[in-house]
Amino acid sequence: MSDDPTTGAAPTVDEGDGLQRSGEAGLRRLTLLGTGDALNGERAQSSLALPLSGEETMLIDTSSGTVLLGRLETAGIPLENVRHLFLSHRHFDHVGGFAPLLATLASLPEASLLVHAAPDTLRALRNLLDLTLPGAEGWLGKRLGWRELIPGKPTEVGETEVTPFSLDHGLECVGFRIAQDGAVAVCSVDTRPTREIAENASGADLLVHDAYGPKDAAEQSHAMGHSTATDAGEAARAAGVQRLVLTHLRSSRFVDPGALAAEAETAFGGPVSAAEDLDMIEF
Ligand SMILES: [Zn+2]
Ligand SMILES: [Zn+2]
Image 1: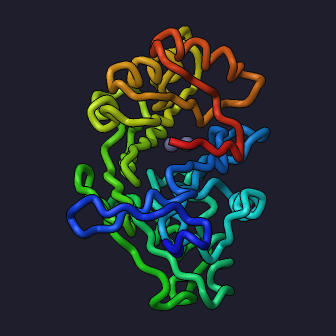
Image 2: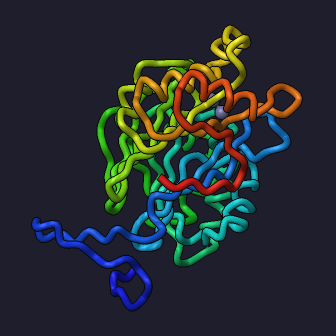
C-alpha cells in the first residue's frame, strides 16, 4: 500500500527512531469468514481474515470444502492477496478448505502462500494433501512455503507479529496473539478453559473465543474440548481485554447466540457479541 497521502492512505509518522509508522487505513480489522462449529450447517466453519500491510491478507484456518472461496469473494478479499495461512489444528472444520484453496491459488500466476502451523498439524496437513490431492504441493512450486510454529515464539508477517500459544483441545492446537499497528487481537479457538488464554490475551483490544454452550452444559462442552460462554467471559475478565466476541457456535437447534453473549457478558463485565459470518470487527 502506498503511504503517499494523496492516495488516501493515512499519513506516516516518524516516531523518532527513523521508522515510518503509517497508522495504515484498513489494518486492525478482522473479518470472520466462518463462525460455526464443525457440524453447524447454518454457518460456514472456522476461518477469519486479517489485512496486512501492502494489501496482503493473512487467514487463520480455512473452514471446510469450498465455502471459504465464496466467503472471501463476498468479503471482497482477492484470492491472490492471501499470502499467509495460519492453522490452529488439524480438525476438518479448520483445515478442510485447504486443498480447494491451494488448487485455486495454483491457477493464479500471481499467487503465493506461506503456511504456518505447529509441527504435528503441519505434518498432518501435508499428509492430508497427499491423500486427497496428490501432487498439489508441486503445483505452486516455490510459491508454496511451510513454516513451523513454536508456541510462545513470535513470527513476523510484514509488520504484524503473530505469537502462537498452546490451547487445551485434546490434540495439538494453538491460539494466536496478533499485534498489529499498536493494537492486539487474540484468537482462541478451539479450547477448554486454560490459563494460557488469559496470559496470552493480557491487555488485548479484542478476544475472539470459542463458546460451545451455556454454563449448564459445562460438562459436555469440556468433554468435547470446548468452552462455555461463561468460560469465555472469565478468560476475557482475567486477561483484561477491551472486547469479547464469541465464535465456533453450534446450530440454533442447540444454542441461542444472544443468550450465550448475555451469559458471557455477566462473567466478563465488558462488551460481548456473538459473531455472525462476514462480521468485520475493528480492534
Ligand atoms: Zn472446530
Ligand atoms: Zn477442533
